[in-house]
Figure 1 (tube, rainbow, N blue to C red):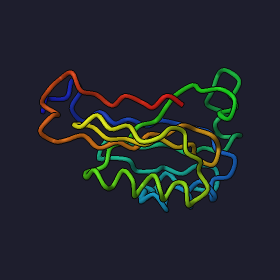
Figure 2: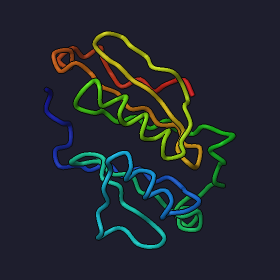
Figure 3: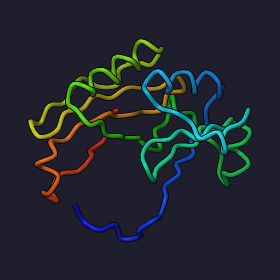
Figure 4: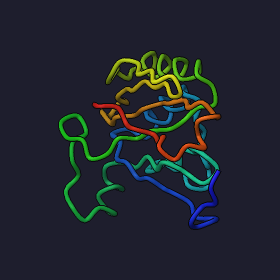
Length: 150
């Protein structure tokens, strides 16, 4: 593994959601938890990794931060969100949980041998990909998280 360019730097991705509680329940069914220090009725800080979080923001809260009009994720794609899991079969477990919780499939499974992924749309239409990469392949800099074609 390479040394991070900016040790200690954290990532917060902000996305608008129509209903904070509904989105929290959806992502909790996928195994995510929330930082209560940054979670209230207008926002939820979803913990993705040690240094990465997704802020689920009400439309009103998101609009306070955004300088441009908010796009409708059901008709426009501005970003695709990809997160990894630690085991190949966990990709299917998480994807099936997303579908069972009301999400919809965005693309079928992609199996590249060293990497396996599935993608889905959340309740608001945001595109997500869950992927597993063979740990022995991560030393090869040519491999990366390639979001699904949604």
